[in-house]
Length: 192
Image 1 (cartoon, rainbow, N blue to C red):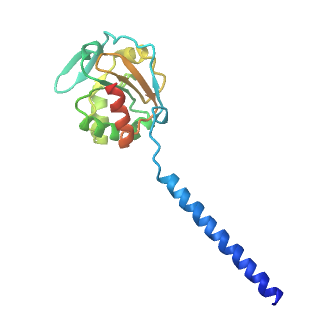
Image 2 (image 1 turned 120 degrees about the vertical axis):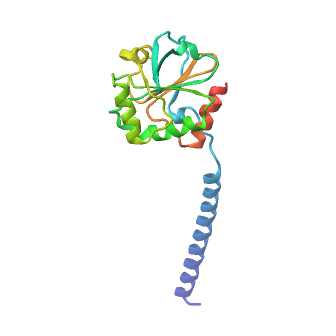
Image 3 (image 1 turned 60 degrees about the vertical axis):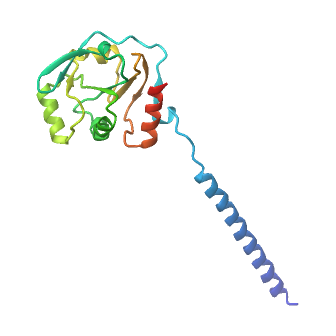
């Protein structure tokens, strides 16, 4: 037999073997990709609170047709999402449309959205109208007392309070309110 023919036959065998091995590896890789890894609180930047503070007796003003004052301490019995944001905060502006939809879909939760930067209720209402937010409640935190109490250091920050009135954790930064897995995890955490 011709040497070149034998070399060609060996090369073809090596190429076919390598192709079949790579296909086998790719198929195994597909199996790994299809395996779903559950989302954890760490994945969504949720940090648990171990030193739960009691809810403060500080007045919050909610502006609807008429302004009403209430205190967080009055909200026991329902889970509360306490969301700190600011009109000048770019990440807040990206997050608020999705938070607005989350509020509409989760009416069993009390939502307290505070802008502690001294923005007037008229400016907040104008900001919400300009951006089309219909569900985020218009509220003010007089002199930033609530944000100081909860030691908020940046915006957005979201504090989660269970129905017993205990702070269970917080997310500093944007919450992905549009991701069903994130929402499911947060709702499950509320139920604990």
